[in-house]
Structure formats: C-alpha cells, structure tokens
Image 1 (cartoon, rainbow, N blue to C red):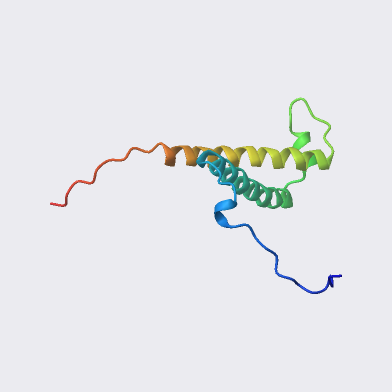
Image 2 (cartoon, rainbow, N blue to C red):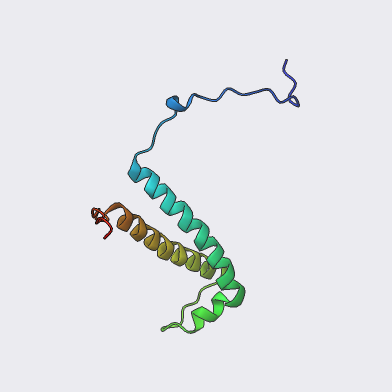
Length: 105
C-alpha cells in the first residue's frame, strides 16, 4: 500500500502525445483568458468607487437592480468590452499586410 504522504513521481505524457490546438483555438483561449483577467481587475477597481445601486438610479427608466446583479452586469460588460478589444487586436495582427523592407539609402 502506497503512503499518501510520500510524493511519488508521476508520469507525464510525452509532449508529442498531448493534443495540439489550432491557431484559432489558441487565439480564442488567449483572448478570453486575458480579457477575463482584465475584466476582473477592472470590475474590482470600478466598484471600489461606484455603488451599483447608484448606477441603477440614473437609468431611464429607473431599474430595480440589487447590488449582486449590478456587480454581475458590470463584470460581463467589462469582459465583453475587453474581449472585443483583444479580438480586434488578434484580428489586426493576423491580417496585417507584409510589405517588403526597402533597402536603406
């Protein structure tokens, strides 16, 4: 019987045995993860200064939103905005025109 407190080396699969993601999957995963992290930080900073109940009072018509719903709506808004910015960046990088360099004069 193996002792659960003893760290035994685990076998990891060889790198070639791991599934490889396509470029689109890597781009999507990177875009969503980075935008999630930025949206999390932005939500914390924003709601440190702004109460979600105050935001619901300035809407037309006034919305009855509890604070937790306000935090969730704010987070998903920030996530959508940062994901759109990240996706636009990936698009611009992937579709850039390659111009040959002119020789120096």
